[in-house]
Length: 389
Image (cartoon, rainbow, N blue to C red; front, side, top):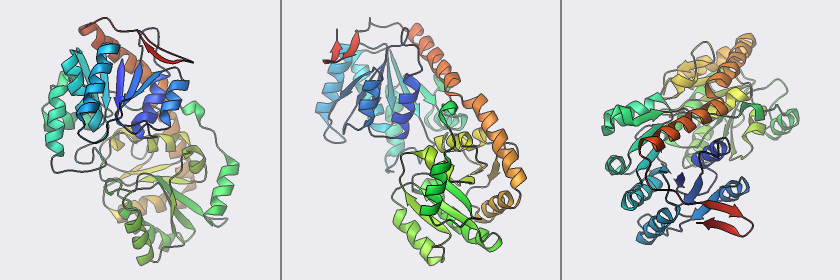
């Protein structure tokens, strides 16, 4: 297996890949990871876990030298499967793997079009179709993404596999000290109820709707405090919206935090009001933290949240419905506890990382068995670096 990511930065794909690869059977699935550009702190994490890593140092979006380096790497490693993650990896990895004669090229699709990547371009649909022609199989993180690939891009249904994202629920523990420290830092009153979202501050997350909902909730529940954790292109726009609505004491932009578990310890309710979603880790993490969840009824969220059983679903873009659902949980603590307890129980069953890793292992084995391809090289990592033989 050769995995290809855009960068080794701390991102959805690299964090998930790190958790996944540690749980795959290494005697049957030997994995190495390459990035196109930029390096990043996840490289050290992969290497410490015993995986070979490579930085192809592509200098720009279209870099023939980066493509050449990747082609040489694939010819050295001779993988049975090249697994690509996100656009640049899909393009470079698909093309290089095809040129090298790799039998299986698998691409993971994490989100729904048109929000399937950070930067939206007029040619995105064309780029997706180009990547479609290079990959032999696709992996969707939820059924909604799978249907998008089949209907929009014409993928044969038998070549699109759905495996939902997983989480190590055993690693989550409540942190009373972090709860107290953060709530003091955010000036939350002693009787305050913290409604939190953890998300990139970008259009598809619907955070403008959350600010509008906060204004409505404040009239019924003045003790409510909304905390938006994350960074992104809409940060200034959201700050202006908060000021214009006079919500400075009610809504706080808390910035980017790497320790999500500690941040969620300070919350009482979790909200994700997205216009579009694949299978968001944020909701699984909220379940693991024991929080009741309110989310938009879109994409993979309807697969993650069972309405009235493990959380509450509302129409996307509807501030009034969102405010009503949040107010309901604030005013009915018993319901909030019931939803939170059911949420973590069901999520442990559906989204356990060990269960998901077993599904990945089975998929890789079936793809590898279908087209054995060339004998793979031996890739080892030791104190002297990476050796390919």
